[in-house]
Amino acid sequence: MNHNAKRLFALTFGAAVLSAAPIAFAEQSPSEQVQLSVEQMRLAAELNLRNGDFDRALVFADALLRRDPKDVTALLIRAHALRVKKEFSGAQNAARHAWRAAETDNHKYTAAMLMAQALSSDNKRTRAQLWLRRAAEVAPTKQHEARAAEDFRYVQRRNPWQTNLSFTLAPNSNINNGSARDTSSLLYQIFNPLDIDGAGIVELGAASKALSGIEAGLSVQTRYRFKQTERTAHDLRLGVSFRTYQLSASAKADLAEADAERVAQGQEPSDITGSDFSYGTVQVGYGYKQLRKDQRGEFSFTADVGQSFYGGDEYNSFLRTSISQSYYASRTTKYSFGLSTDFRYAQQGADYQLYQINAGISRKLASGDGLYLGAVASMTTSDTERFEYGELGLRGGYVLGREIMGTSLQFGLNTSFRDYDVSPHDPSGRQEFKVGGDITATFKQIDYFGFNPTVSLTASTTNSNIGLYDVNRVGLNIGIASAF
Image 1 (cartoon, rainbow, N blue to C red):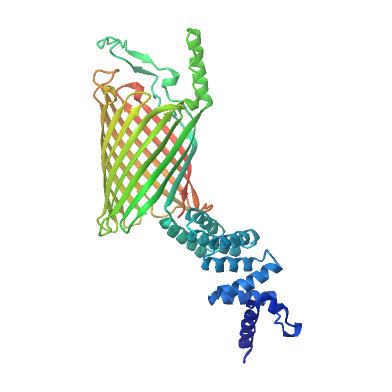
Image 2: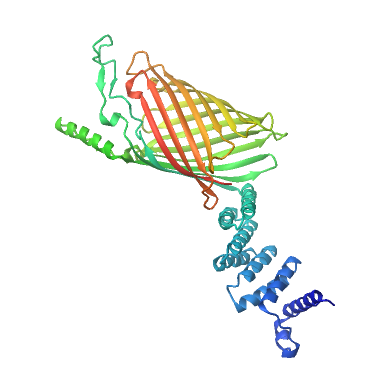
């Protein structure tokens, strides 16, 4: 019998002795006992774990833990064995203690992966996803990180809960959607429409012009998939969003000057603050998806009801519905079509109904870049004529398929024309032409728990035949995006 065979025999024999009744083992004389070093016991535990003898592996692991409750290897073996035995609570407890006791990235990675596996097997998949992000964060190699990301996507597909979180904290040049003009023709019915000297031209107050400030916002959108088949899915949808503003020093100064003039004229000051423009929504809804039989496209339907708030007060309640269909003409080309409605029942302002149709094409180019082109047509109706309009819009997007200095870039352009038949400010109604663009940078070289920081710069200008509605806007948005 060679040296390796003797060692394996000794380990197997030792395992058999330790797995026997503890009392019988204790009653043996010292000369009959099998003495194993700590390393030999760890090796024996690992061999039994690999060979599928989980009870025996647990005997060795527990013996090691009686000697040292912070023995990371024993805790990892215990977590693995208990998960296979479907003792998920014990497996999670062992993995958690292993994570706390681990001093190397290898051990931390293994503990996080075992914890995620135990949680997923216990149908706690959202928590499992969090631990897989932990595993990716401490992964000792790129291959280990890729394994954690792959497991994350697997658990995500099986998780009935899916949540998207976004936040905003950035400067905004126009928090109140104010005019870029100093004057405008207003309420032409009050004045003589034929007055060529411009009797209808009114100087806009500070509150009607663009006010700059800092925007802070948070949005949480989640869905629970309560029924799923091979080709269909039924979801409960929930959403909450809120954004508020802090006026800049220049905006405060302009408003203070305007308030001083109001007081001098015997009027009450406006006392406008950034929170006066805050906006929030809460909603609940239902979603349905169905894959084509050939799996070359997807039909979807959503319906949501909710309530919006403006300046801290109820603004309007809403009912939104949408249907859409996508179709992959090839591996590189996808078409999409959609219809949507948005019915608003006002607590402030007027009721209105929005109807919209859209179509688009997405294509992956030979260079690896992505291109999107889309068009949208909408119509709004209301009992109040001045809220009714028709609109046509175009949107284009371009995504670089390669990173530049570890950063991925996405560009967008959009334009639209909106026509109101009726306006109290002009006998010809109101016409608006808007052009906008945006660029988003995702910093892939900065990764924290599987998230990358993003920065988006947006700019738009709206030209109207009524100066009050000439709007320029520049915004900077700082956020995060999931790396997997």
